[in-house]
Image (cartoon, rainbow, N blue to C red; front, side, top):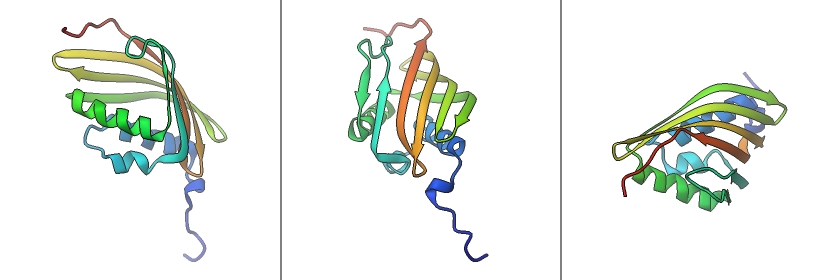
Length: 137
């Protein structure tokens, strides 16, 4: 079929967002997997929460470092996407993150806003609401 090449910008926003969340959730995914879906100018804004009381704004390198550090600390992790609402290159995502550190299970109900550019994640603003937990000393 001549002339039917699909370029990254042709991939629907929701598909890019779901792939991104799947990579982040998969403890077997690699740094290359994550870098492959991140725009070179990507930025990530985590609003204040119990894990990051002051919040965080990260660039690609800081995000990759956090992704790799999480893989070292977590023994299980999953993200269930409840809803994705798309308007052009922007998506609102409601999801539930669940992870285990040692024997402690941690659950966060998340809302986020993601911008896609050129078929890649450009921005991600996340609002994480954690259920009560405590980690051993």
